[in-house]
Length: 433
Image 1 (cartoon, rainbow, N blue to C red):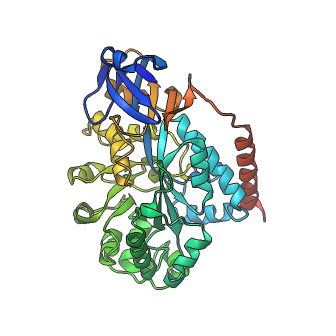
Image 2: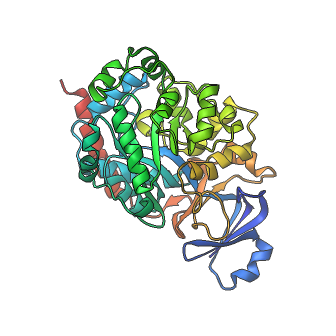
Image 3: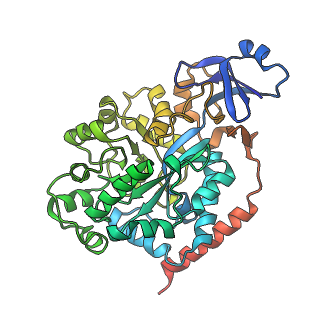
């Protein structure tokens, strides 16, 4: 098919006015000006989007799709209070609730132009739901609060697919994630990093997110001390930053560091030397009372900085471009083109997916998003200002239309009913005596 629009944003090269993308068999064949690709397209089916911009499918580099049904149930609160509420809300959930919630999250991502996620998962439900919807990405099996010798048994119980390089399909890769420094024993963090090397898969961790975490690392006390005592009994305060602590465990190498809100200049130097990348979640950080990550300094250090929404349990929605607007307000010196890179190719780099997603170029997966911007002479600035769920015109993932004419193409009645049932169970858990 030939897809044309007023503007195409390949990301790896400048915007193309009156641009087009030629797709065949789920792969991008060529990107260029419409007048140049018409002949190459031959009798291909054609989709024209006047008044629109075409971008790569967006990369939401940190999500918890399995928590989508909790949207609006948990009030903004410090991280330690919020975690307690979350655990209570999930108390009655089983695989069916997680699956329904993840399915709803996958649909909401696509409606916002997202075709790739970096998702934290607790079992096979979320990757299966995402695959059914057409989402690609890296799916990190999360482990916390278990002794290191039980790691492989726990992964087996969670149905972790230890396949070659973690690739479960052309569009999905499976990784590992020790939850955080305060919820995993140091021996568990080391064991998971060793498993990553053994399986040759991506690896992510929530690090340097909150002031409570910083206090715990420095003194061993504070709001997260009880959590650490219960889930990581081997932990003792290192009197250092979380990032330095993970580095001394030998576990920063190749890590996708999620949040990094409290990264110091010394921490950033460590990250630049060892980490795969960083993912910032601006609106979730504000929801939990945390500062924004020092994105400008992370970028200047040469780190790939992806962007995530986190879950709607700590956010209002899964609209990734809304995160860019927060970053644009906080860091006005970062050019719009750079912000778009963060929501596409840098996210793919941070997730180990850069060979398939994040740019519009020959040989990449046929993932793209179309947004209504009107008559634009500056598509990158207008993208940051206007793109997102409210202006999504069409979404293609793996060469298949998921959204067209602004509407999600598959029925969601069953998904929404199942997610509503999961939400009711969570509400009951939160409100019962």
